[in-house]
Amino acid sequence: MTEFDTEKFEEKYVYYFEELETAYSEAYQQLHGRYDSTILKAIDRQVLSESEPFYQGDGKFRVELPENPRERVGSVSEHEQFDTVLETLVDRIEAELRKQFEFDETE
Image (cartoon, one colour):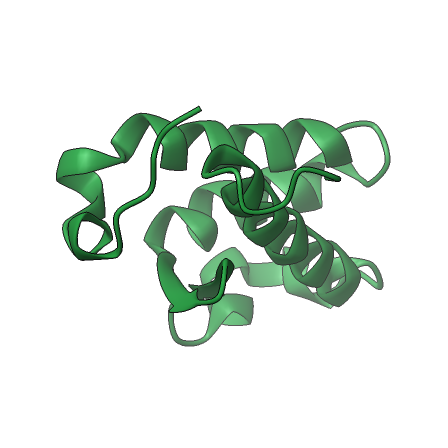
């Protein structure tokens, strides 16, 4: 685990790239097999690849999505599970970020 520094997180890709990569990967793996892989892959590659994690304080993180996530994935956005998968994946990433930086030992 990595000691967290709020000032360093402003340059997260310099100081915390591995932790960010691990958090996103772990979240993806947790949903793999639970949801349609076409939706999961499209969200991962076309939406989350352009997302931005932010530290909000008090051990909480927020993942900001790029504009128009539905447009980024094309017809996949019409699938009934799209919103559920996107929301669940973002929630899992935020939880994994807390875990990576030892804010939430119970996750």
